Length: 365
Image (cartoon, rainbow, N blue to C red; front, top):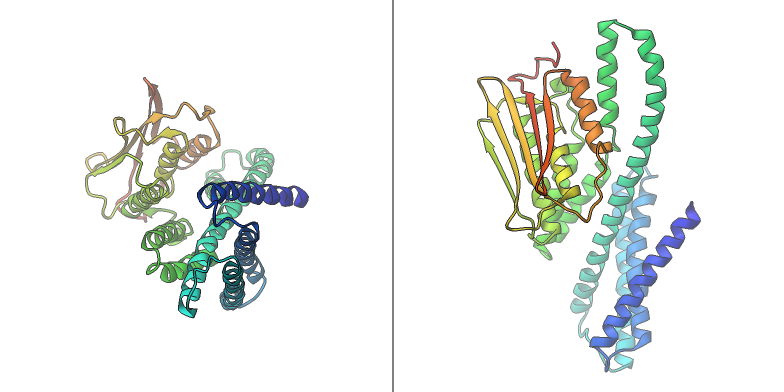
């Protein structure tokens, strides 16, 4: 497994180096030199893996954050010396670009920050992938034991409710990334003045992660509706950053969301399906997200509509949709409706669930 991972890293860096060598040669034929290019790639690889190593090694220490900062300071100092050597090589070949220690520091900081952000993205997606694998393993084990449990609990209502709660907790299982959340806040503070747009993206990601690890035990497993809607807005805005504001999404809420509670992470699952399977870059067919709060019936009507992306293969009843339906069945029994429809390349979903005006009210009570 580790050998395959090493091969993937080598292949990725190989493609990256070849691509940028071609680009640099085409646009800088007179100043192109293989020695200078090699030094640049060595610095880039050093920054990326020193940051990844700092994060992984620091997890083994008690004072994780202090060790991480010290490790990164040492890594940055080494990078300054490497960049200074790079400049000396450039002077030898007649293309000096750094003329003072301040310029050396700023150039190194910009360089370091760029590949540190790449390393953060790599770590985030690596941990997300590991979490999915762990959840799949847990799901297989849970399904095997569930059959035995159902035979034992039979019609005992109290044990049934306990099982439903444990199932819900399992489906929402995740690695609590508190440490990564704190690191994101630190990099936001360090990045904001140099790259405000990147800083805004980091703080949005930090807010989404903070909400994803919220413990709802104190509110009987329910979340404030207004917080759920704010989390959806953050996810939309973060994806807009990713696609350079080229997404066309309209999100509106009708009704008063204050002092209303629902099961967390249900609505966002439908929104994530839009990003996963939809074409959201067609200005003539913008994606629509609409939330209506009906106080007379104490229900929420949540609808999504988006153009289908024909280049993506959609498997009906996939893991995401299946988990949504399973959670709804366990938590709301027959007190909800969820419908999916596709007409003329437009995919829509409509969910109707009750809300609670106080978290003391229990689902199914």
